[in-house]
Image (cartoon, rainbow, N blue to C red; front, side, top):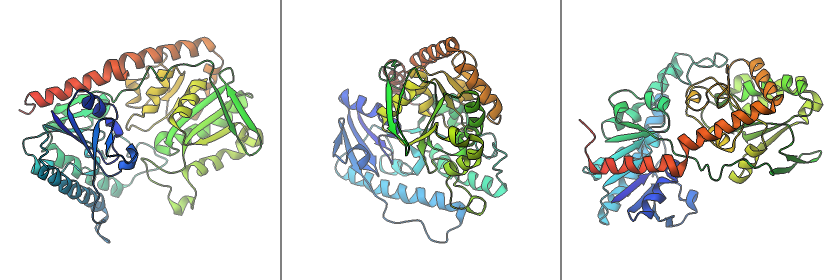
Length: 424
């Protein structure tokens, strides 16, 4: 087959599927706006890289609810022109697999009407029942909710184009309205459970302004990971639990991994918080309660290489994962594969991976006291940590393993799209 992937930041969610198809002898191309993500090479793991670039910015002064839609149209036009050039060169894909989130695949069918289009269904924006309106600390008025509905214009346009969809979790798939929901296969991107393994010999060394620190598996370590430290991933709730945790656990250290910006939620309101980041806002909130001794045991490691990130998980005594009802983080499943004892928020889609007292412990997202209690209870109980961590790894291997579970299902899904009609 001839297969075209479209992803602004390729490979993204297709980092395993695209090379696997190339290794099977298919002709695989990838249309991307950021070829640097794969080293800026003309070919990556057998996939021919095709860069594109928008020729204009959004219109100054456009209605604010249309900025998102116009941005997607601009990128869709740029990708459309790149596809026309590929057509001119004689390339005619059998299947196009696209992440539609940035609009690039909007006009693919105008170039290749007979190609099957499959889209990665990551998230359908909702005014109720997901991230918007979930946290009363940051209330969303009617205007943000209306703007959120407008962000679905791109999703809705794709529903008339797509022959099939794929979504990593059932909760994410179920967020899409029918009839698109009926065309979505639930198959996770997959995690490498052969790489993400327990390692009792792991050690992690880093420097602070006052000392050089080396932490080993025998130390008492609480870990928290998020791409960026923001409320949507529960950073504020985690920080508010730390004073009680560190008071009760005088030898524990806390490793916090994540950037200072935002990945998903809004930036802090400057009228309320000034120029501070979310990281700084909630660190400042608990600084006095932590005191100098507590502060000395909380280590912000920033963003790490994947190898160092894995070491953080491997060294963890208790790993905390919190999130609004939103896209499930790979980091949770990676922590499960490593065998972490996990305390997680009782929110969807976390429940698809963490079953209370079987593969982890679930707590009320809004209750830092309950979070502190569960973390301390696990730190007190090595047997429970071993049981939960072992169960978590078995669950990850059985349901999210890249080579044995997810990739074979993805390949089967793709060949089904190419070989049989999917729309009624």
